Structures are given as structure tokens and as C-alpha cells.
Image (cartoon, rainbow, N blue to C red; front, side, top):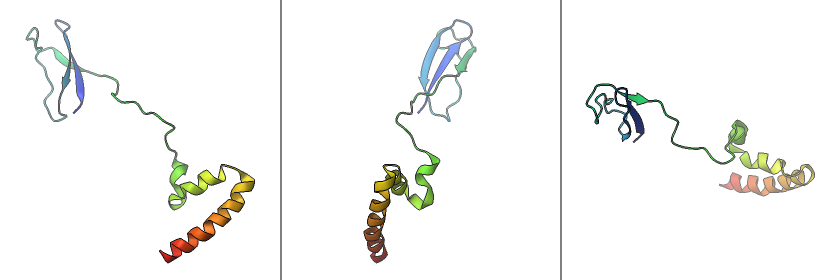
Length: 95
């Protein structure tokens, strides 16, 4: 459930309220009883950490391993890719 920040326009009372999205908006201030209680716009309550992902990570039917293998080294990856694809293709063909 999200936490909403409310502030009274009359007395200045501020409060964070845990509400369902389907709950009605609060309008009456719990301190002064006036109907000047408004919901405030606040920042998101989560942070995205890590390197994330890119559109190119999952292209070519999930061949993300090939993209990461080719970026490790041009000379070595060509020979290891062809060697790795031969057993992988025979095992995937039998599966």
C-alpha cells in the first residue's frame, strides 16, 4: 500500500497516511477539523540501483550470452564462440 502525504491548509498540520489506492482522499484535518486537508505530491519511495539493462541485452531470441562473450575480446571470443557453439548446438538439437 502506498504512503500519501497530507497537509492542512488551515493549521499547517502534516501527516503521512498509509492508504489503499481505492480508499477515498482524506479532506478533514484530524487536528483542527477543517475541510482543508489536501494530498501532496511527493517523490517516489524507491530507488533503482545497479547497472540496469538495455534493449540490446535481450535481442536475437535471448542470445545475451553471445553479446557478452563477444565484448570480452575479439581474437579469443571468435575461436571460443565457434568451439562453444558446436557442442551447444548438438546438445540443443538432441534436446
